[in-house]
Image (cartoon, rainbow, N blue to C red; front, top):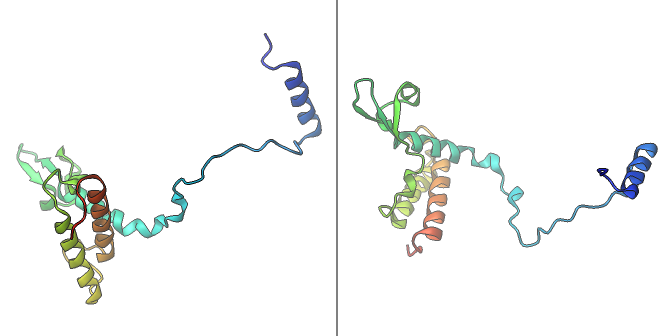
Length: 152
């Protein structure tokens, strides 16, 4: 059984003979009402992603060379490379039931106040306060959508 019908093969032959398809069929797309992710300037999220990476390391738990537990907060990411990861801190911010919206509001406000006071870099992390503000905004948004309603 041939791959194409006679009509399909004639059309393909005509296309190749003439070199181009003058009026190609248009693909259908039904995107009305869907999110337009291209509106988000991803490059503006770089500091926020760096803060997420910082937190992922800070709240990770490693096994040291003698079997001892080592917190990510106590070592550099470079020093952690040779250690066994026991628990990743990548999603620590989700916090189970331990985090409250008020804690994230307070954290975000501390970074906003520091930034408005002229301090651009967070002294603990060495990263821009704006990245921390971005993280806190994401955390509050996620928490309000999936865990608790915002009351603060």
